[in-house]
Length: 175
Length: 106
Image 1: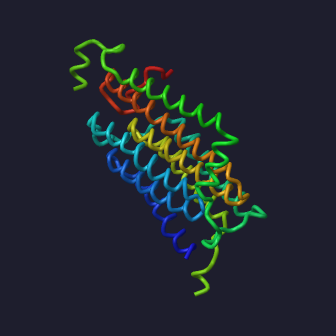
Image 2: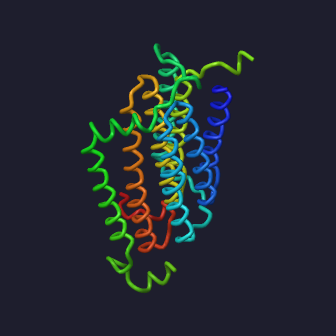
Image 3: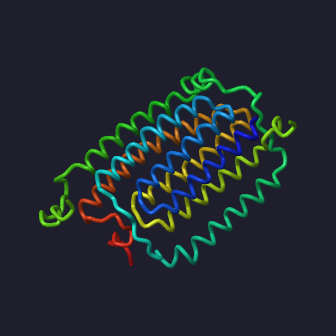
């Protein structure tokens, strides 16, 4: 059962990620990214992380992707025109990615002592997680809330109109 | 029927994570739209989260999962600020094509 679920949702993940690369319209890329994130939530559940599966759906597939799609629609982003890109990216970047993937794959396949996951192994309950989070890691948790607050303020300050805005002629061209 | 009850080696999860990360890097290199480039970065973050959860499962460590939780929070903050920067860039240059946002290029 675990094996079948793994294959189905790993397949969804990879298909979504490849589709993200192939689509030329940002909306289609965003929708395939949602597929990737939702399938990852199922994979988290298979690995026994129930809280993270819920958080993945709510935070990633929900909040962050809504933000992405909102921006795509706000800026009326159209089809991208494919160009070759920089030469450094194709000469250095792509071979480096292939090399990285090859090294990681050989490492993981040769690694000794990696266990296996089965569906009978229990979940890490939210209770266990919260006990560690709110006792040992309380300070980092609170600092994270400050980080989010600063990020919100920064986002509002950056996106507000009239703040370091270009000359009016260019602004009408943007609309 | 034996096939149905087989366990999944954790190495396969790690392989999936590596493949997703590589696809994210490739997207970062070949996509020409600022928003899609940003999406590729999110894909890379997700791939790393998957390997965190896998190792947390391997070592029965709750802290690995908590780390993923923190990564999610940082990713949310990053998405908010990043998209605000994208809006500001679009307002200033009226384009989303990364080839034409080259003010700092040598």
